[in-house]
Image (cartoon, rainbow, N blue to C red):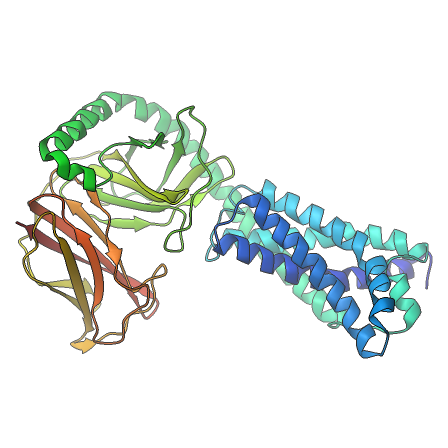
Amino acid sequence: MPTEGGALTGVAISATLHCLTGCAIGEVAGMIIGTAAGLSNGTTIVISIVLAFLFGYTLTSMPLLRAGLALGAVIPIALASDTLSIATMEIVDNVIMLTIPGALHAGLGDLLFWGSLAFALVIAGAFAVPVNRWLIARGKGHAVVHETGIHGGPPVRVVAIVAAVAFVFGSTVLIAEALTNEDEAGMHMEGAMAGDAHGEGAMAADAHEEGAMAEHGSGAEAVRGLAATESGMTLALADASVAAGQPSRLSFTIVDESGTPVEDFDVVHERRMHLILVRRDLSGFQHLPPRLAADGTWTVPLTVDAPGSYRVFADFSRDGAPVTLASDLFVDGPADYRPLPAPTGEANAGGGYRVELAGGRAAAGSETELEFTVTRHGEPVSVQPYIGTGGHLVALREGDLAFLHVHPVSEQAPPAGEPISFETEFPSPGSYRLFLQFKDRGEVHTAAFTQRVG
């Protein structure tokens, strides 16, 4: 084995790439498990570290075992070869993942998650090269494997190419994220000033909510989203107004009674937070996927076309308890509020999709099953799973925009021609607006219905 110069560096790079392969497999698997299960940062990191060592040792051990070495002889070789190298990579990798805002909280479908992870793994490998070089020069580390004359694992050249691609991908994602955050910071400064101007309007809105709760009496207890504060938590918008028709960024935090941002949320329907936006006349519905940053701030791109007063619903679960907080968002300009459309059993979802709502007359206080059948150009559609179920349904009450909790009858997407079924209990007589979302051919469509409740 070389002990100095470029030859030693080459062997150290080769050893690091072999070690990085097992480390990356375990780290990616651990991050996916922790993120998909909604585990805490600490638990996710522990799982990732354990799997990284497990896969790292395994990739070193398998060629030795296949060559006939006894397990008792292989274990000390694997430990001596990989332990310090993997430990170095794990420390660097997880520190980077914790440092990048929102990386660990980003979902598996978010480029920020994969870009951060790719970047962190490559940088961690770079830090491990001098460590391996130092060990090999002293006849330790990967030199122990070389003494056996037995090598395995993927080709070093292939791993190097993959690492180079991962570095370019991760760097591109993080640069784009940094540029986006700079624009967002400027909008927050302007939004803070604008938010003060709407303070009196927010107080009036709270008074309206209290009146609505009193008006509906006990029925209001069955609904959520009537106030910005509930269960010791408050929805705080960074900016209470946006410009009509212009791309912007909506930011908010969920704070506890001490004003500290809340960060531990349960995963429900594949998300920690469901953000709903709708205008006061129950038009302009949007279901948005916000992203949580390291400082506890949620952000999401937003464009609102029509001026008016909108209601923002933050729907989430914490410690198994569902919570829906709501606050007002103002879009400057003359608002053309329209009456609620008349009830109909069929709705156009665009793109040739039609949705039929089946069911009898709904009565307040009684469980009601809502069945939606989707067709495209007259042919039955077998919808794809959307956020973990066959469809997503939001029900809002006319007037106070109370948010109803609607349960899917089955978590599975129904076969073609079969309805997407939900169960709910309307708390009071009146009119409600139902917003059904379903997925087909990779795209999400929305159908809106008016439901009269007797």
